[in-house]
Amino acid sequence: MVDLNMKVFENFTFKEIIGEVPPLGPEIMSKLENEFSTLTKNLENKNQTELQDILQEQIKIKLELDRLSGAMALSQPKMKVFDEFLAKYIGKIESRLKQI
Image (cartoon, rainbow, N blue to C red):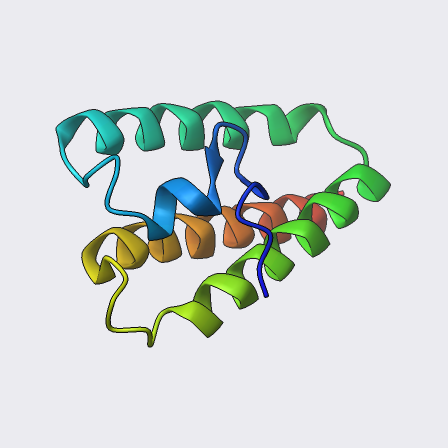
């Protein structure tokens, strides 16, 4: 069972992603885009060990989200958006690791 209070990125929890509240809308999208931008910029300041730790954490989160994505009672559009942002973030981390 997933920890509903587990952080996804910095300011979202699983509870917010899989729950009906808050609904997916412009406010959530804006908050998610801003957070993604900040997190990707912060990757420049991380060393290889920190990047690997972040990568492992984000992969774990993505696997949990993927596992839950088939549950019909959950907000599929919201989960899809978060899944896409997680995949992009993981890609950014991997890219940054290759640069080091």
